[in-house]
Length: 356
Ligand code: ABU
Image (cartoon, protein in one colour):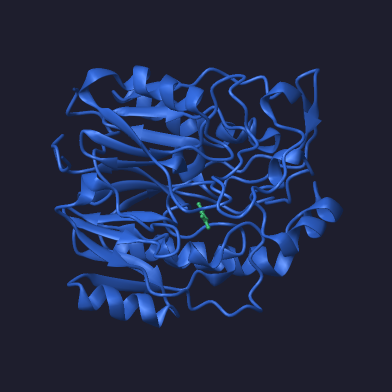
């Protein structure tokens, strides 16, 4: 392990030193594709069919951009170095020969880049609209590599029709979730993984298959245990509105999705997230309201929370944390919150075990 590497993170809570924060430049509805259907809120399917390949509403993007500026100001004020991706055109068509698409955004680095130890991994993402998303981060990746980081990438996926269950329908009540991705090739999004020292907590989802998890397991090698959990979530895509690792021994859980707390956390305090405060009228194009759980720890105490989420702020204070409010509701409309909008580049700390 190169301790001088500019990339180094073992947990979700060690003191945050450097972070990439996403941008909303050119952010656009992804072109319609069957892979979207299982994860979009029901009321949004028609919006995506109609507006695929067009920009998100400009007033939302302007307001989200202002929120990001404030988020960056807060992070820097707390002593964190903030880096930003490069704006790349998102509506320029591209094709592999087998299919064509346009892009989406570089707003959610947590989805496309996974940091484990000193390795920064470009994820083989399952959505065609995200095929080239990592180009926005390439200047940073090259710089981190030159300064001593390890830089890896999952096998570039083909994203041909064989990857998708084109006959996908909702699971019947009580059945496990049906996933749209097949095992044709490895795919995963970084946001389906959480770092807990030597344990990497993972879930299978509509973008992360077993093949992708196995690729990551072998890539990481014997120092880490990749442990796959299943939740009560009929439309899984990303684990970070289901579990949040707040500190050693403190786990925030989505009370609807985590019906039985996994045994590995039996010695931890289990903190059920308060019900989301977002009103029904607030547009959420690509996420559930449980995005209220998508917070980022600056260390074992300081945590950035949506400014109007009073129930979450009170709950965190009551559990001994120091919440720092930041308005982020417009950014939430694009499908994420503070955890999604960031990727931890470096956190102080060493590789330890926290779970049985
Ligand atoms: N990464 C966002 C997850 C949103 C959700 O599970 O509702």
